[in-house]
Image 1 (tube, rainbow, N blue to C red):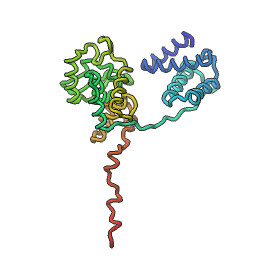
Image 2: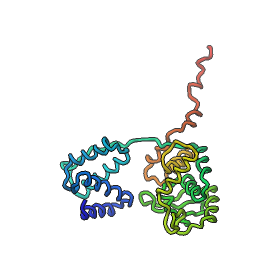
Image 3: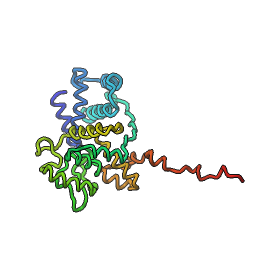
Image 4: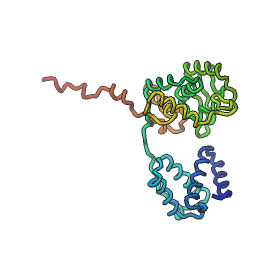
Length: 283
């Protein structure tokens, strides 16, 4: 991928307001395609592009999410930057896979948090779960984002470059005060090895996985599981979905609605209408 094409693609995504993470992923997808054929991407044809995508699916057996990034990046590059029409570029749309989040119970979240002795690590995980934050949001928190007088956490420039507020639980505030006294964060609430730099996302993920391993919990995936648990546990408590949507920072209600799946505990507590019948009573 030439320097000029890379610049054109990058400039296009800047104008569209793409996040740095999305820009890197899309440029990486086009660069990987070019490397696969050892050709500039503008010298490829549609059959070659489709063959490459089949290679990702059939040979490399990539997860749907990874393949979807490649699909989206290539579609953006060829249709919006190179301006190829359907006669030159056409790949079938991939259906979005609908998978229910793998959740932890309230008791499992409690066990996981108790298993973390390091005060900074425990406070980080409590903040993700207590406020329903994304990992990219929690590592970018600054001390002034904790608005204790209003019992709120301010999330600046979250996904979609939107600001929002979410709740600050009292137990989290107490933990944050203890953390502050012990670690004295400066520029960033959760810093890395250098106090002037935020904790890397990979480090936050490892903290979560280490806690899972200590407790022997098998369910759930990465640290994002705690955000899923935040939403679902609030629904179980009867909090309305519109309020949860605002705290999670979702644009569309349909995104939040995936948390409406019913937990096993709620299913077993439901009384079937069959039990209200008197079919066994003699007339």
